[in-house]
Amino acid sequence: MTTTFIHPLTGFIEKTFVITEFELRKLRHDFTELITRALQPALGLLIFGQVFARSGAMHTGNIPYLDFIAPGILAQSVLFVAIFYGINVIWERDLGIVQKFLASPTPRAALVLGKGFSAGIRTLSQGVIVYSLSLLLGVKLNWNPLRSSTCWSL
Image 1 (cartoon, helix red, strand yellow):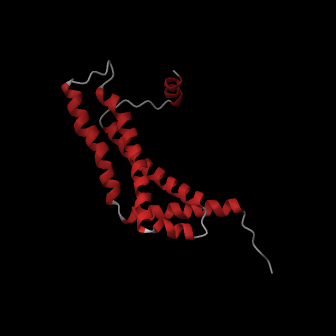
Image 2 (cartoon, rainbow, N blue to C red):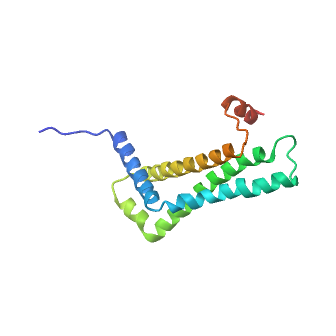
């Protein structure tokens, strides 16, 4: 009789990805959530960005207004995904879903990490949307990571 020994770290990683897959299945069944969350950055870039850029009411120095506002819209989109995931955990706690997860043999850290990974995947989709709209509108993006890191060091 042979016994298989699964390393505890391997089991932890597997359970983390199961939670991530569970969260992403919810996204696949309700794809409209991804579309509605894409509306806010699209409105920010397409309508408000264009209106304020043409009005000249906002002075950004020698930087075009859309170049100025695009990173802020990206950061706002990412922050909203994080906030809504926190609210989602509270809703699931009120519905009793969190108690069912806690009754399973899944470690609590795997639950948190799995939810974090799925939030990261949703955040990547938001980033793709904002970057795509920025490129379509002609925003000059800085792709050099060394140049942006020197800004943070100042």
